[in-house]
Image 1 (cartoon, rainbow, N blue to C red):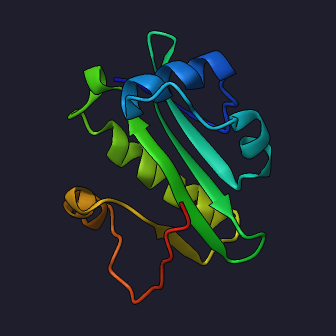
Image 2 (cartoon, rainbow, N blue to C red):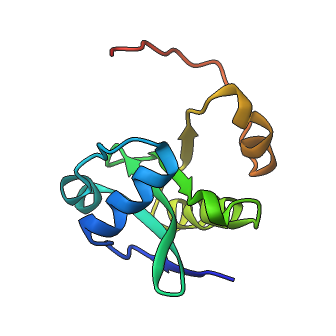
Image 3 (cartoon, one colour):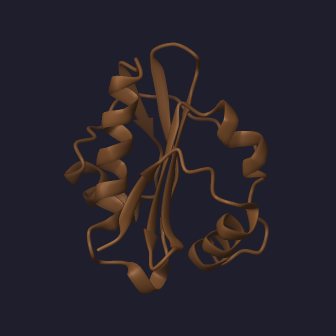
Length: 128
């Protein structure tokens, strides 16, 4: 079972490797600029390698946002994503967030509902 680390600040190489495998794209965000401003982030490590990740961005107040939840394809279906989201939720609450938001594609609805998220009326504009 993976080891879960709070605010691990993975190296760019670790994040790039996981991002490329998970999102099937070679262009990950620049996490070196993102993570220092995040409320929290959680990494899942197996045999010393980053195999899962979630970031909790925030508005500096009571709203936090789950971003970039991912698990390496070879490690899926083991409950890692659920544990990442639950740990991120706990950290967001402990660190003062009152609301935790998440956007996701329709095929992930049952996963996020199982993690405790409920639908809300929210507006969204796709900018790109």
